Length: 230
Length: 334
Image 1 (cartoon, helix red, strand yellow):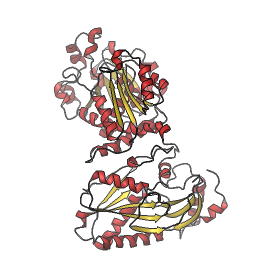
Image 2: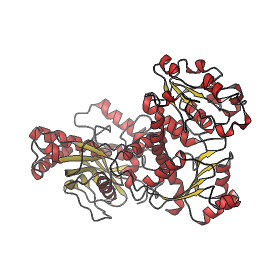
Image 3: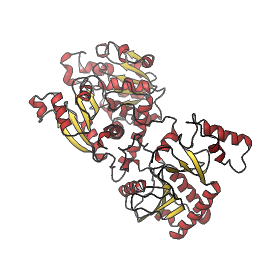
Image 4: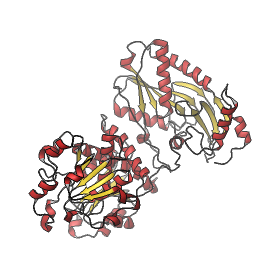
């Protein structure tokens, strides 16, 4: 990767109480992406803006968990007729956090499944790099259940389309709703989310990077220029 | 995941940028890296899960046309490939040597050209001559997958064996694996030797001296030589061994009489209950079809430590994985 330039580095916000050493580590790891560095931006990314920090994420997840509890009237019977489905990879962590918050609110455990819809994509022969097939693990029967599909970013809508196909092959849910942290627009299919963290107008060459502490070094949402032709 | 974030996950999880396989065709496992073999196995694990769903198919290869070109009789491999293709929603055409133009004397090159003219994306070939799949890659633009060629290689069999072993032990590195039987004529043994040594197992090959390969050194790559041991004594092969792979004695090729009799073979190299009792952790595998009472005693075939049917199930998942990953090479249609 090229040197991102001092202006890019300065835009990085260190965590609220980060010490000098931690700040240096952030800068170091950003300019030296080799090695076991998980959760970096893309090599060609230049950060344009931070859209959310960890507290924003937390507040939005709180709001969305309450919306879910209200909409599905989650109570002790929810274990039998409700389920969250996290889409690989970061949708899974968001779904688990939501399940944790619902437990805090109601004391109810809702089941969380993991879905990877790579095999159902319609564009898999158009890419240079084959998307990795990751784990699908839904250990409850989705038949007749109200499901909420959870993902981090809603863009063209093609991933949700493939996820719906995958779900339909696994059974006949009573309903499927869609929750997303960022809706960045530019839909190519008639698909909308039911729960939206935040709508962010973006340009075609831009990308939205959601980073979560479960799999990344830092937490938050960033708007970047991907450095690739749109 | 929305499409904009997807490629980056690939990068996040491994420092390697390009996650495609290094090979466009699967002709043999000789020269395949540990990373590529691991990738096929990892993807196969995900396809195993698909096979347990109520609807056991995914639309991944919709619009891809695959031809199964079988010049040698085969039940298991052909059905396994066909199932894998159908579960990936590919369009499937079957050619077999009887009842087709092959039996009318058409040459392989002409058959291949006809296939090319029919716009086929992938060819699965089984042939009695070593090198036929490689020859095919020079005649057609389609992706070629070897389903067994002469005494050369049978790569998907070795991959499903590796998957079965990894599923059982959680790893392959450091395991001691013995391959027992007709090593010289066995394409299964050859593919397994390449795959298992690449994955870090220590391999012992065992069989009658007349059925052991003469130039083993030339067969193996630099790194593999120290990992392979040769013996003509079954007890030596089973001592401290984790997995015993018995190979089929090809009764139909016994005209050459490379060992005195089938009974004597069983006495010397057949795995019997006494071996299962003496080696309490020994796992037994066999590529099938089994000659009961020759390579394996009949009660060993049905033993709980015989993974022969797991191998068959894994065969479909591994072939789905290979087809899925190799279909990337058919981009010209995209």
